[in-house]
Amino acid sequence: MSSNSLNRFRVRPAEPRDCTEILRLIKELAAFENMPNAVKVTETDLLRDGFGSRPFFQCLIAEANKDDAMQETDIVGFAMYYYTYDPWIGKLLYLEDFYVMDEYRGWGIGTELLKRLSQATIETNCSCMHFLVVVWNKPSIEYYMRRGASDLSTEEGWHLFRFDKENLVRMASGD
Ligand SMILES: CC(C)(COP(=O)(O)OP(=O)(O)OC[C@H]1O[C@@H](n2cnc3c(N)ncnc32)[C@H](O)[C@@H]1OP(=O)(O)O)[C@@H](O)C(=O)NCCC(=O)NCCS
Image: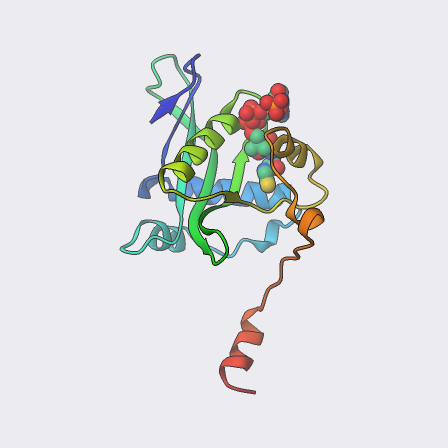
């Protein structure tokens, strides 16, 4: 666990009891990205998929204090990530969601989350951290670029594709 120098917030790994708040933040980020109805996961899904015998994701939680002693806190930000594998470069950390509530931005919470993610990336011998940013989210693109991120879509021409369930069912049945 780590906290900022002014003791206004702290960052810690998520626990099963955080799933309600994690889902709230996932929905807030989806709304920020103009896709409020895209969130289909439930609290039960998060509990099973993040905290079961084979976790599919990990999560860091940022808590802001309500009092100096940090006795009472609010969950105000999170980073959801998982480890994946690239056949060219090997292990990498994929940052899936990264969000701090509007009224807590500029406190350094995002920087602390990125510090913890960078440490996790290095400690697990991953070569890099990948993430997606929607093209109109200029403040976040600039935020990442100021920290040295490269835009692989423009530099290397990658596009993100998806097979949805309908296509998968069709291919699975051999049609
Ligand atoms: C991107 C995000 C997670 C950063 O979190 P944060 O806690 O505000 O980050 P920090 O406090 O470490 O840094 C904020 C930066 O904005 C500046 N800033 C200052 N006051 C600010 C404010 N009120 N609001 C936002 N940014 C502010 C800071 O100076 C800092 O600049 P820097 O890049 O030169 O360090 C947060 O802005 C956010 O949730 N944005 C909306 C969701 C989003 O775009 N997520 C990423 C999707 S890919």
